[in-house]
Amino acid sequence: MIGIAMAAIMQPLAVGLSNYPNFTSKCLEFNPLNYVTNSAIITLEPVAKGSTIFYPNDDVTCNRPNQTVSVDICRIALNISTSSRSHVLAELWLPEAWDGRFLATGNGGLDGCTKYEDINYGAKYGFASIGSNNGHSGTSGVSFLHNNDVLEDYAYRSLHAITKMGKSLTSAFYSKTILKSYYLGCSGGGRQGLKAAEKYPRDFDGIVIGAPALNFNYLSSWRMSFLNKTGSIGSLDFIRPQVWKGLIHDEVLRQCDGIDGIEDGILEDPRKCHFDPEPLLCNGTGTNCLSPGQVQIVKSIFEPLIDMTGITVYQAMQPGSEILAADRLYAGLPFPYSLEWFRYVVHQDPAWDPQNFSDVDIILAQDLNPFNIMTYPRDLDSFRQKSGKMLIYHGLQDNQITSYTTDAFLRHLTTNAPISVLDNYIRYFRISGMAHCNSGPGAWMIGQSSLGDVGWGREENVLAAMVDWVERDEAPETIQGVKFIDDVKGNMVLRRRRHCRWPYENSYIGIEGGNGRSWDDWKCVLQSV
Image 1 (cartoon, rainbow, N blue to C red):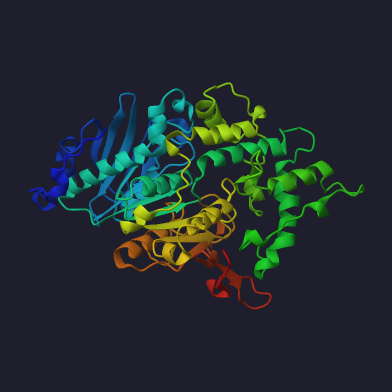
Image 2 (image 1 turned 30 degrees about the horizontal axis):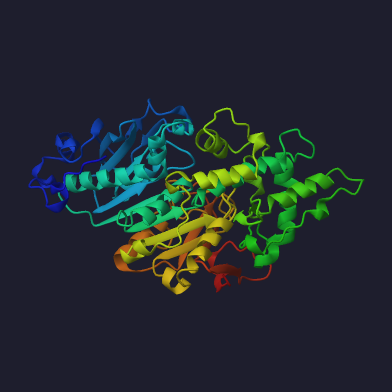
């Protein structure tokens, strides 16, 4: 495990930045191993603004060969031992213009991929920023096979380890105490942040998470269940992706787009859409239609996952996500993350056949629950008592994790605390028209990552909103989202929307026949939980 030199935390060092001729020399003369043990230095270097860092040794499946740096930094890369047979590769970027804050970033999927772009995003805004490979390399889960130490790193330990290490080195490098500590992650990174709040409530003052992969064991089963529903490619009644993206999605919009008051291609609240595919049933004369078997497949897609006892264990897919879901969940192939989880963790059999998936596997995965990776706490009281704040967002056109599961989690928390209590430390924003973590036809850019970077301001940036909430006690009521043409910042704005905090939702108040593209066309209205 990591040994922290506590002197670096308890008292300021005698030598500060002002004692060095420049930031470069400060970086080169800094020795991280004075403050952490069980670690080896991979890289220690000053990097100038505008430079590109190359990562030739990164796993190619991560698709992150390089990263351009937005500000002057001192880059520290370490190999941290977490056990005799596991280690974490971590990157800490210390900006010259440090604002006193610390930011840890998460991963995604089964990833062992460092999100350099998010480390850079934090450094750009003055955070000492850290990320890691989460204890293994690449997007595969094969490293989990017969190695519980690597699995434990993935489940929770990596993030805690790099956070302890990162905080110690940050305080030592700047010879100052960290003002506040934050976390930013989506999907699997969202689960990491929630697990940190549950298990290590003192690690972060503010946590921003998106589309969290909570209820992880049932999520893995839910994703695997789609192969049984759709059938394999070429099987009887298999629905081709173009049919999902055209015929079926168009019918979803025809039935449900106007429920929120305007037809703009976005469902403001998919929960109000009770989609019926029966109108698409072939009548014997047309070809742009569905067979009876295909109609049943579509109905099954929008049903929850129910175990053999009849209990709903995972929520249904929300309608409106068909265009992107057609290429993953509905593609007639086993969802890759679920396939590898069942092969390498649940069954520990690389040859396990996904065609054999059944209710027995659902129960087996949940009973196994290694290191409580499930991540579905009944409360977050310890995090609240330590004055922690959490901002959750979820796209309502998420094509990989249904937004209904985050809705259900918030309702789950209300069984132990009323909304008035939750509202003091948890704010949940449902982002209409956002797909999984980013992209989509809606106003999805909310500062949630480098992809969603629209500048630093509490109204339009979830990380900035969190900073103001933690440091000024100004809780966010709405988050302003924006959509640019072709999703390129600087292009013409296609739409703006103030996304409401749960349990409020947007209702159209614009003129009849308007386009709903301005945030003044919408009003947050309280809805029943």
